[in-house]
Image (cartoon, rainbow, N blue to C red):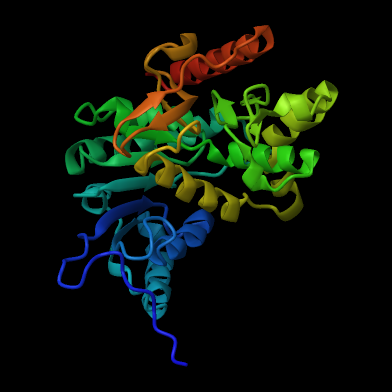
Length: 340
């Protein structure tokens, strides 16, 4: 029997949706290489939505970017409408629907601090913010390069034409790690673990909220009662996993980060299921006493895939309050160091 390919989810005679334009800075790097092929294959916007990739690199990185473009073309992805290459941020970001900012120096855990990295990467995000302000003020932007919360604040500060709610910084990787660890501890599939929230800064100070996590429809703390494991194993392991991976292989966890990027954008772009939430660092509206304007990891929902709201009324005990305040202090120090 001959197998037929699945039908598209639009009726014959209808026009498929226009290509979504995705601009990616630092696209030929380790993370970019893990990300672009998955986007081109449909892992971000689904099996019928075409994309145009606008890829940005520094002038020194253009040869690697050209090689990446050749590989993408060789894959003959049906959903890849076009590939554009540039070393100019304004040109690369022009007309983008989504901008994913990977460009920047990586954190060297042995030789540099977050403040050292901020001084290296801050000027990149000044330039990127100014380009986005003129080239694509209606785009939604996900900042990934570290320190991503503060890089996001820097770029946002330079882009007054872009609404603050269109900016996001990545923290889903920590949520994914936490989900996997809770599932392993409870001996359940990861699909059973939900409503995991990570708060604050994407740093080793990040607060992983076990108390408000669920396994199935039961609070996780009812099934995992070992508080020593929560505070002495679970929280430190999530916070330091990138450092551990880096010490083993000398590089960042790029495949997991790519998965986190895809999951974040899908969650932002599609309605949140009932009684669920997702997470990203966003420009705080003042919820949970987080100062307005601070880019801070918060629990979020979207009803329409366009606008998001902070999930309110989560249980915050004295321990959680202290951890949130620790992250607020750290981010305010980074914000001051960045001069914003």
